[in-house]
Image 1 (cartoon, helix red, strand yellow):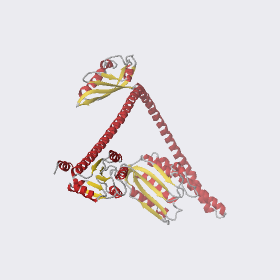
Image 2 (spheres, rainbow, N blue to C red; image 1 turned 30 degrees about the vertical axis):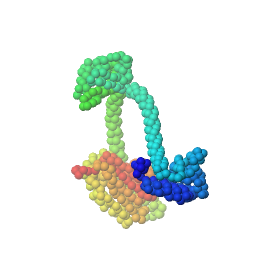
Image 3 (cartoon, one colour; image 1 turned 60 degrees about the vertical axis):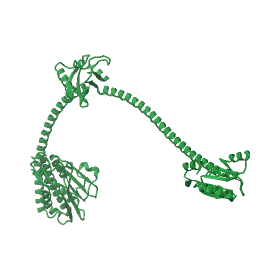
Length: 557
């Protein structure tokens, strides 16, 4: 093997190189193909320009050996068309020719050829030129790849620098914004401290240097450039008996990491008397107190306000005591008056009722209309008696002594329902009674509450074919329980809900539902005395729900 072949073998793996030979002379094809095949190249051959073009476009080779003179189209035109096609533009083309004129060779280079091989062929020349141009193509590819890589890296670096530049600009903007914000914060802090009359300070433990805010100078009534020894000079503003206290408190923070929050009378450098509140706390670094920070607040106005509030509270307490005494006296007089009126009304009412009975027994000749009049008078007299009894009950409920104990609401409800059997007789009533808890209260009074609410439910469901009455409870928290009585009766308009629990307040006609308007007032008064609440919800012709809250029993009376 000669030197050219050895160099070729060193540089290339022929098995990976495909060469297309386009020549119309079979002898030339055979010679060149044999040279190259012996060296290991993959060979493709064709005898016309059009066939060569089609083959090159379909499976592009690594190099083309092209005869200048072809039967259908000359080699120069084939090369021009190869270079005009994106698929074949980069394939090296070596012309094979017997032409020796410079003009012919220049024409080949002009249309895109890279070299010439003269006929008759010399094996060494063929291999040398093919090897050289294949190597040049590989080097070109490597250079192009290196250039692409370099361009990519340059683009990436340019992008990085661009991003860094953007970030730098953003950081500059952010820093400027931070500086502006800091300036605004300082201005706002000074304004806020002035409005709230709070001055801040800082003390460096190692150097002994201290810093005061503007407001602290204003509170002391000193110019900001006074250059005083802050710690020592500010102590002069406290009374002689308070100075040791504030100094020891300061040492406690600086030396032992304690804190303080103290109030003292204070005298400014211009001899103005104030009240101040001073606080301090330590700042640690590596487990040691390195700074003390604190503030000093002018609380003179607060002290004056506290004193005024204290004075007003004392006056208010006295006025409440006086008013309470007046109300108690008025209540006693009112209760005495109610009792007296009720007692005085009973005698004539009994006389009216008695004489009406006698008159009815003796009178047998009265017409039907007269008898109706007498029945109406009798009914009104009895209703007046019930009203007097309810009024007395309501009056007594306010001052009757409460006997609190543990009350089993389950049993109490069952007792009241049992007693209401006569009223419910002959009616279709669905009772839904949920388990009820133990509560603390006066059993007698709570019985009155349940009697009133259950009686109301029975009364206002009288027109229902099937009356539905539900009694249940809701747990608000561990100490309070809410009891409710719900019915599907006549209901009420919620815009009048505030009238429900008032004395003599009725939302239905006497002709439709009897009553005196005292029952719910008694309910509210009893529950209020137990420390609970009463309220109701309803809708006209869709029933009502009455609620009251009580303290839940913890199992002990």
